[in-house]
Length: 162
Image (tube, rainbow, N blue to C red):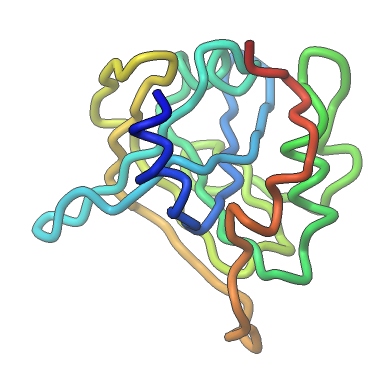
């Protein structure tokens, strides 16, 4: 593992808040593993921890929403990264609306998209959800730096990893 840390320890990717809705439940979490994975057609993959409440809701969701946050939005990252939906409704503390297919869109996100879940793939302790973007948006006056892993590494996880 120490050898891999020599590589992964240098990474500082953007972080995302991924939200899901299914079976009358809403869920959302802070995600550090995500990426565009195809040019034509455009596809995006987000990796959700199997230990996470959001993963359990996302398994039944047809659509997920993926949100980018600006550096000034650490409080929103703390809400979705430092608390667990197993114990509280995070959406009581965030402005949100319903999007395409019932997806949950955080209204204060810097940019976002809703993606139809095309497939799921295993990857260790996370499952990748490959998404086909069907709806998107952004704040009109926000072009500042995005929140990155290095900005949130000190947030204690709401659902601790063993």
